[in-house]
Image (cartoon, rainbow, N blue to C red):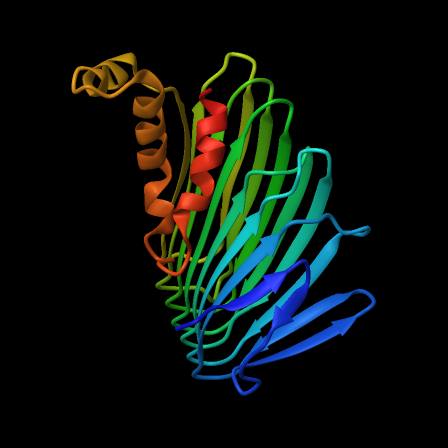
Length: 269
């Protein structure tokens, strides 16, 4: 499947039967038809004058895989918001990657409305120098038997900083649902900062829910092991960091993960 391409708010829509695109002064709306499967690759290369706002409406039994790649110059700032509305048996996988911008803000608000929906929200940030990133998510489960997985992975160095705040709200009608929320960060500098606030609000009494956060560093013995096999220190660190973020990309085989290798090289230089 050839993914739809979105660059700075402009879609190249090759088949209008799959999606409907509507733009207004307050934001844009993308509607996925019932039963359709769509891959989307969004690349942000230039900051907008105003915060971007996109509403995604998913039809019954639709499948969407979306990669959002924020690759702005460090001289620019960026702010964006994604509103998600799911339907029955929707399958939605979303990967938000941030490696650019001096200061970036991105928020997601999702209403998981239809029974049997499966949602994966993944995020990866690689920051150095004095870059900063703020991410906020609010997920509401309005129906039963919904599966929701949220995974955040961050790599920070120099004086960069990241703040993540995420709330998953399981309403009373979300019985038999299963949710997980995990934030994992890797710090390569004593001056870098990561703040995480994973939260669950549970009103239903028959659900499975978990959340947590971890913070770590590259282990010297792992670097030494690779060096003992003839790999130089910088390449060894790059291999370990690539392994740290590798599982974010497993559901998105249409995305070239090598695009982030240049950034990995920068943060360990």
